[in-house]
Length: 202
Image 1 (spheres, rainbow, N blue to C red):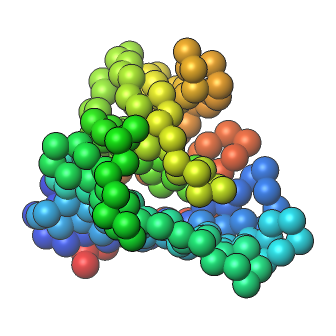
Image 2: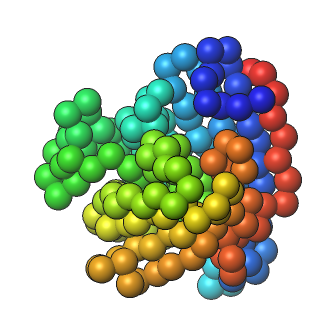
Image 3: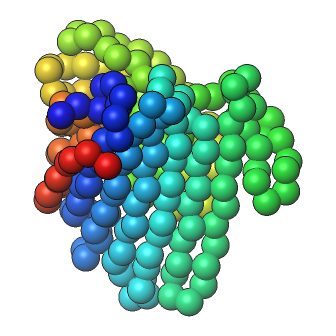
């Protein structure tokens, strides 16, 4: 089964283990329909000797363009979070205040740095052939909940592999990630390792 054309509801559940931070697991639920897809996940673990939990949600349309992105983080008993919306014209707005986020205007993808799930968005949206490369700038949501534009480049190096580069002149970070037939990460060297996946009809 593929989420290429979700004419009937499709569901995929994946679990990733964080490799560079002990005891972190990311449980992600992907749902597809005629309207688009949603990615909802919960990350649990320990950070600075404190219980840590994060919940994220991203909604995209059928062309894998972000429509909504939200993240809530608990560090111990403290909770912080936000939700962003993107219009058809590419304008981003903070739900809580209704304030337009001008520095993000025109951007399409969102990159939540706490999860490998959002790598799927540009991979599916760009639809690269092997050997092709494309540049994009994502709305980067950092673990401290700061938000900023992040230049990125994806190069499809094989049927299931992509070279991911980010930062100024794409020199800030590089990794060759492996994905499955859905575009979901299976191996993110040194950072994430997928432990399990299941799929079915919703």
